[in-house]
Image 1 (cartoon, one colour):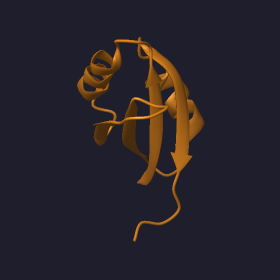
Image 2 (tube, one colour):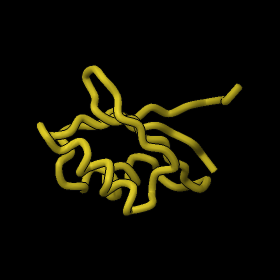
Image 3 (cartoon, helix red, strand yellow):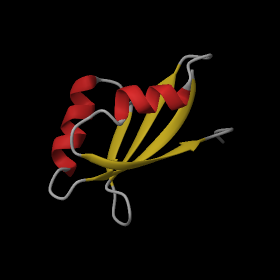
Length: 78
């Protein structure tokens, strides 16, 4: 499994709704609310060979209330 993170900027007043939709979809392993430019930080895992860009586009960015995303691809956990 390949881990990666997505920072999510939500439309005003939609952070909890977006977080609940992500949790209901059972596609994120962890979902955190954050302060700053982005409202949520989510950790995802995909199988080897899955296109992360397509996953984010088709599974994450389609959720109503999401305004913007930033994907962070990681290399090694310590």
